[in-house]
Length: 472
Image (cartoon, helix red, strand yellow):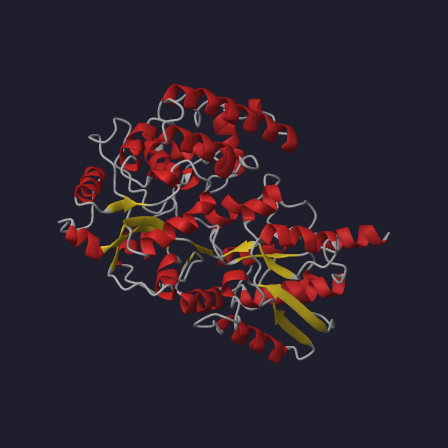
C-alpha cells in the first residue's frame, strides 16, 4: 500500500505547489555553481543568496551546499546512492542519468514540469519557462526528465595572440582554408599549433550538422519533439542515414585529418582525459591554439596566463572544402547542454531521508531557484556558461565578441553518441583517434564504425522496446 501511495506522489499532484509543513535541511551538490567553496580564488555567492531568500520565506527549512571537491561525480553518486545517502538535489549530466547511472536514483521530474511554478508570475507550466528543444534533447528514451537543464557551454577556438603575431598571422581564421594556412605558418615558424585529444563527440557535430543540414527536420522528427533525441539518433543509425552507409557520415574525417596532422602527435590517440595536459601546454605558451568551452578563460585567468588571448568560431565550410558542405553556420553545434545548471532530485531508493513530505519541499526549493531570473543571476556571476531559457542572456567573463553570432543562432545540432552508453566518448572516440594517428585506414575505420553503430542501434531497440519498422 505504501509503495502505491509513493508511486502516486511521484507522478505529481497539485499538492506539491508549496513546501508544506516539512522542516529540516535540504542538501545540494551544486557542482560548478557551488557558493563559498574553500580554495576558490573568487568564491561564488549567488546560490547562497538565493538560498537565503528561500529560507527567509520558510524559516523551518535550511539549504546546505556541498562544498568539498567531488573529483568523479558519477562514482560519488553511485557510492552515495548505494548507501542511501545521496544528496537531496544534485548535479549530474543528463546523459549519465539517462544511460550510465543506476535507474531509480533520480526522480522523474516530467510531471512537475507540467505543473505551474508559483515563483514565476503568470506561469501555467514550469516547462514554458524553459527551452523546449533542450527538454527534448535531454529527455530519457522513455520520455523521463531526470533533471532541469538551464545552461550550455559555448565552444570556440582560443588562441595565443602573441604567437599568432610572431608567425605573421594578421587576423584569426574565418574559413577552413585560412585555418589550415594559419596552422602551416605556425609550424613553419617553429611554433606548436595545437595540443588536444581530438574529441569525436565535439568535432562530429560541426561537420554532420553542416553535411546533413537539409535533412535536419527529418533527423530530429522521429519522436515528434524539438531537438535530436536518443530515439531520433538510433532510428537514423538503423536506417543507414547516420552511418557509413551514407557517404556524408565520414566524408569529413580526411578533411579533419589535414588539420590534426599539424597538432602535437602524442595526444591524437589518447583518451580525452589527457586534454588537461594539453591545456597546460597552451597555458605555458607551448602551443598557439586550443578548442574549448566558455569555461576555459576563467581557468586561464586562475592559471596566471600572461599572453593576450583571442577567440574565433568554427568556420563556415564551403564546397571548396567538401562537396557535401552546405554552407551552414554550425558554430554553436558543439555548444552542449551538458553544462553546469543540471539538477536532479534523489529518490528514497538512493536517499533514505526522502519522504513524500520532504520531496514536496525539495521540489519547491528547485522551483524557487529554477526561474529565468535566478538562472540569469547564477550564470552571470560566474561568466562561464550561456543560459538557455527564454528571457535570459549571456554574460561571459571574457571578450565574447566571437561568440555573439553562435549564441544567437538556432541550435540545430546533429551527431551520434547518446543512443548507447560509451558510444560517443568510448567506441567512436577510439576509432577516430586510431584513424587520425594513422593506425587504421579510412576503409578499416568505416567497417568498424558500421559494426559499432549497428550494435548500438540493436541494443537501443532491445533496452527500450523500440520497433524501428514504425519509423519511415
